[in-house]
Length: 103
Image (tube, rainbow, N blue to C red):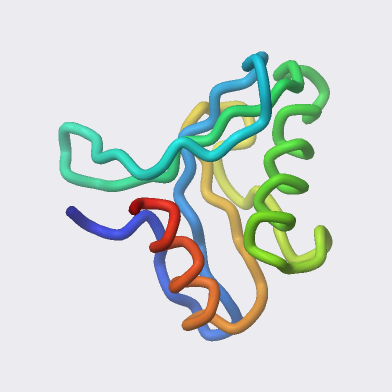
């Protein structure tokens, strides 16, 4: 299975499948799509209106990865379930933390 992220010079791009309006905010591990690409499964309580679910996802991932909220942003898929988050920081350290979600 491939990894749900791509290393960058100043951090990582994290591929996420977001489920809004969930019972609680949580990360559900990693899954692969039919085409073989992997993504992190995440759930947030926020509704998908006016960017609320995206903001909740950014805050949750920042907390889970131990980075400031300003270091996480949705860079693709703003209105889609499949999103790309850009997370700024030490790429190797962030990759190690993301890989721990799949265990």
